[in-house]
Image (cartoon, rainbow, N blue to C red; front, side, top):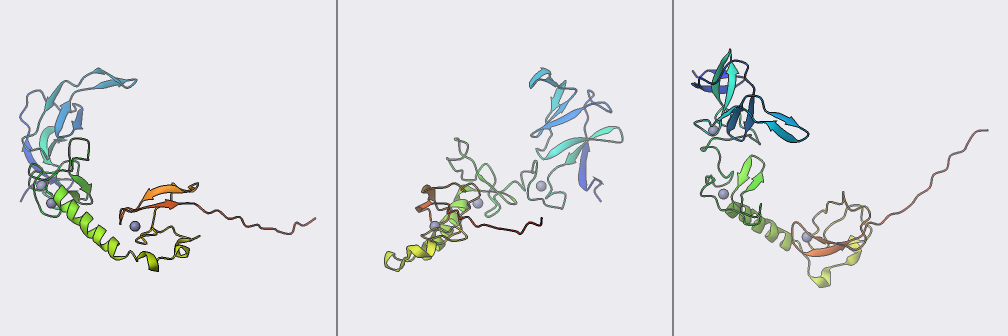
Length: 210
Ligand SMILES: [Zn+2]
Ligand SMILES: [Zn+2]
Ligand SMILES: [Zn+2]
């Protein structure tokens, strides 16, 4: 039987003579910072006293009954997987589709300028898996595109919902209420089209009582 606190597994006692009950602790990624850090006007005027890096990247420090412990922060290890974790252990920090770890995962060069994986519900996806999804999405969208001789502009004229005039995908218009021939690329078929917001006015009259 493992001991738990708030549903999280208690891993170990932290043996560090600098720790005492009541010391302030902040998390910065996996690093645990102890001691008071003072920020004034956006500038740090006093750094924390010391830092401790946990033996496992998903562990974090917590004071339990006056004693500092390492506690498991990976929700998968704790038995209640969350869609988004602050930190995950190596075993559970893998592509949601193919299970490859971060080190071996293919990265997208377009993200962050240096290459990264794709964040998604449940964690992240490697670039290979993401490209497979994109390919499938594109193929499905292309299958919906009717040839030019069957295409009728009127089907996309003054519609309640804006749809891509190629693949009929719904277009998000939340930011487009003043659009006039605004150039868009469809997120499903990747073709371009122009969007115009059509506004109409209606009037209401009510009898006023004298
Ligand atoms: Zn885990
Ligand atoms: Zn993958
Ligand atoms: Zn489209």
